[in-house]
Length: 211
Image 1 (cartoon, helix red, strand yellow):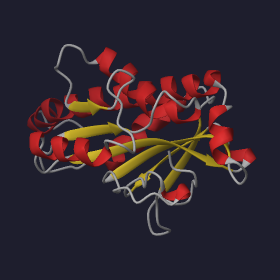
Image 2 (tube, rainbow, N blue to C red):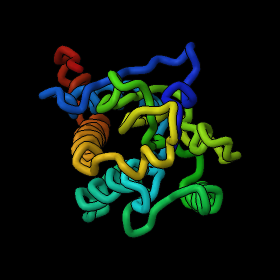
Image 3 (cartoon, helix red, strand yellow):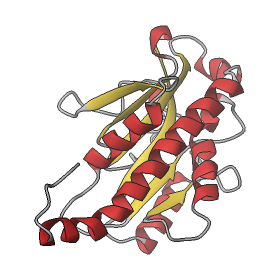
């Protein structure tokens, strides 16, 4: 859990903010994610979902990971997902899990997913941007940064008794946000998977290039 929604990006990095209740929220997430993914270089895409189901507010990451894992059980997905309800990635095992991931996937492009707290008017917003997420930054925990890019969901209000706020965050909101994020990532991975196969035919047939 990142307790401050401004701690995981710098001003020079582009940051998109999408309300999870928007009718096309998952499509927006997909498009923003595709724009962040590497082009011209074949890299493993690794999704690292951070959090724990021991805290309702901090369960966003493992919920997303579980939903994605259920969608990619055939192992044909170009995205590799880590951090689920069954096998969460949290403060106690974060470095160990990152070491394992780096051994399995060399030169990977990592997308860190985590929950955060923010302003009241921002609750329910999904943020997508360049640069890593910094787990534990809001509670002065010295944890490694995660990701070349990040997706975070603002699940509740920051500023006072954050741990109590996390425990009293509505699961309904967290689950809705997790479903929206997972749907967006699933759409992005389908587009990313199809892109290499479609592009050569586009050029070979001299058709107009589409996005």
